[in-house]
Amino acid sequence: MQKPKKLQPGDKIATISLSWGGAGELPHRYEAGKRQLESVFGLEVTETRHALKPADWIYNNPKARAEDLMEALQDSSIKAIISNIGGDDSIRLLKFIDIDIIRQHPKIFIGFSDTTVSHFCFYKAGVTSFYGTSTLVGFAENRGMHPYQIRDIQKTLFSASPVGKIAANYDGWTSEMLDWSNPENQSVARKLELHSGWRFLQGSGSVKGTLLGGCLEVLETLKDTDLWVQAQGWKGKIMFVEVSDFMLDPEYFGWIFRNYAASGILHHISGLLLGRPYHNQHWEAYDAALIKILKEEGLTDLPIITGMDFGHTCPTFTLPYGVMAEIDSEAKTFAIVESGVID
Image (cartoon, rainbow, N blue to C red):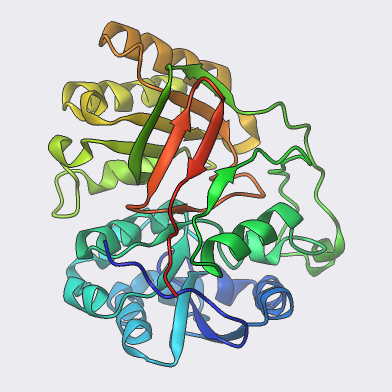
């Protein structure tokens, strides 16, 4: 995997709308994210050509969205690209994406949820990208970014040293939804919920593997496309997944993992990470489904950590694709043992 160059204060970055056009619909929320990116990290923030178009226009022009990504990659003045928000139709961009351009211009690219599709484009190109927060979410957090989120971005995107051990955010987590259409809510801090720690469901000793995964529902849209990674391609990987804010029914959750078992994916991975569900909904049922399926598959030694701080709750830590990580089931730790960026 090619690693992109690290960020430095003063660098110019571009925001992009690859799925839902929320940045154009919610200018005050977007400006809050832009302002906090500039003030906290010292970055110069610009927008790709169509990033602030209305949501209907964004939806109706998937080719233009893909062109924005290609243009930002080829613009030598832009050092990183940040997804504004997820959505539900990034899959429509695939026929317009030039994998060679991604390969020839490795840059930091960060986002989550529906952005999973774009991450798999980078993965196919052999370029490390970053499953993490977005402009309208963590960077635009009400009343300022969470310290946990700031530290994560600094050590993951601004340093070429190994990321190291990732700690649970015991300051608390939130998925409280304060209406983004009301500008006054931007000054209201969201309520933090008590953090009960990550759950190490099973496994012994320590295992290492490179990181690969994304949003569970979005991964389903990638199956049988040129981007999908077949079972052998998951060998030795630490799979990370999280469910969207649609709060996937546990029965469907189980069906998806039955497919991963039947296809051989679960038999090839070296470990599994599950992000905290939105509102922490269904977490007990999800854990129970994993334990049941893996027991029936004879995979009771596969290390699993659930309830982790990535995905649709805030704040989050960032997962670099294709980068080596380690699960230590005895010490109950998780670490990203190399850097996701270079000097």
